[in-house]
Image (cartoon, rainbow, N blue to C red; front, top):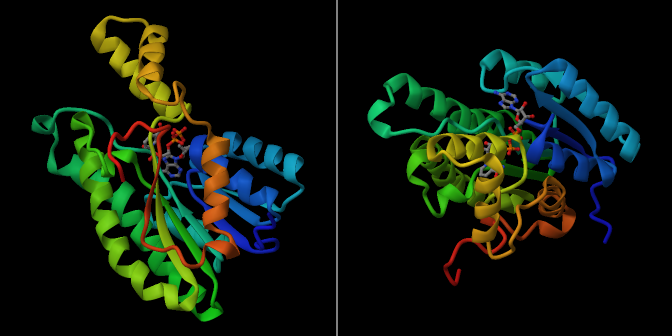
Length: 259
Ligand code: NAD
C-alpha cells in the first residue's frame, strides 16, 4: 500500500534506539524526510547513517534533551514545520510512591506529559493551516492497565492522554489527527532495564525473568520496534485521516479485555 506521505517531513523524538527509531525507520522507508532526536550525539549519528543507508531518505540528527526548553528549541529549529510529529522520551523510573518527591513527579510530568504538549503547541497550528498533520504520542499500555510500580508513568501519561482526547477533536476537521500508541512489552533497552531490575530484586537471572515474562504474553514473545514503526507509519499515512484521539494498544494480546 502506498501510504501517500513521500516527501513529507517528520520530527521523531527519542529516536536513536527502540520504538522511536522503529518509527523513524518506517517513515523514512516511505520517503519521509526525518529529523531524529536523542541525547547522545554519537549513537544518534550512527542511527541516522544506518537509516540513510537502508532507506535512501534524508535524515537529520539533532542531539538534545527533548524534555528541556533549549532542547525543544534546537529540535524545532532543525525541523520547524513538520507534517508528522512523533513524541517520545525515556520513561520514568519504577518505584514505590511513598519515596517519590515533588521533584520526581515534576520530572515525570515534564518528560511524559508537558514535553509532548509543548511540541504539539509549537507545530499543530502550522499543520492545520497546511491541512495535513499527523501527531503520534508514544505512551504506554500502563495508561490502559496501570502497573503499580510505574506510578509516575501511569500518572503523567494519563494526563497527556486526557489532554489529547480534547484537542484531537478540534484538529481533525483540518486533516490533523492526534493519536497515542500504547506499547506493551517490546524488546528494547528500556525493557532490558525494567526486566534487569525485576531480576535483581527476585534473585533470578535475567534470562529466567525474560523467559517467564515472554510466556505470560499470549503472543509468547516481545514485540519488535519494526512492528511498532509499521503501525506508526500507517497512522501517519493519508489513509488514516478519519482516526483521531485514539489509544492504540500493541501488546501481543496481553490486555485481557474484550475491547
Ligand atoms: P529505549 O530506552 O530503547 O529508547 C529510548 C530512546 O529515547 C533512546 O533513543 C533515547 O536516547 C531517547 N531519549 C530518552 N530520553 C530522552 C530525552 N530526554 N531527550 C531525547 N531523547 C531521549 O526505550 P523504548 O523501549 O523505545 O521506549 C520508548 C518509550 O516507550 C519510553 O517512554 C518507554 O517508557 C515507553 N514504553 C516502552 C515499553 C517497552 O516495552 N519497550 C513499554 C511501555 C512503554
